Length: 205
Image (cartoon, rainbow, N blue to C red):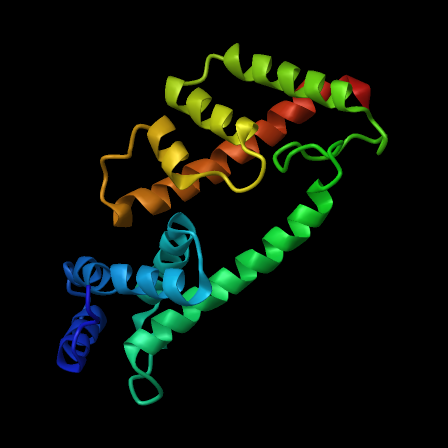
C-alpha cells in the first residue's frame, strides 16, 4: 500500500483536530500497512512486532493529534519516528531480558518476585510453575482468562499478540480494536498471576 498524498494527510489531520469520529479509522487504514512495511524493510522487524510498533505510533497520535506540527515535519515522518523509537526501545529491552534469561534457572517474566535462593534448581522452578498452573485451573476464573493466563505461563518472553487474541476469542476483531484489548487484558492477567504467585508461595517466604 502506498503512502497517502500530502493533500490526503492534511485533510486527515484536520479531521483529527476536528474530532471527526471516523478520522481515527481512516488514519489507521492510511498509515498502518505502510508503517509496518517500512519497519519490516528497514529494521528487519518481525511482522507481528512491526504491527505492534506501528500501532503504538498511531495510538500516540490518536491520543494527542495536536502534538503533531505540520510545520516541523510530515505526518508520515512523525509516525515513522515514533514507531522506530518503539522498535529500538523494544530491542534494548529484549536484549537486557535475554541476558537475564540466559540463566535457565531464572523464572519467566510473570513470576515475580523471584525465588530468594538464586541457585534454585530447574526441577524446583518447574514444580512452582506446575503449582501456579494448578491454582489457575482451579480458581473458577472465566475460560478466556484461564486460556490467556496459560498463554502467559507458556511464553518465554514477549506474549504473542496472535496467541493471546485467540485465547481471548477476539481474533475476529479489526487490528485497531484488537491490539488495545490484547494489551489491556495481558497486563490485567499478568497482575492476576503475580497476585496468585504471592498467594500460592506466601508460606515459603
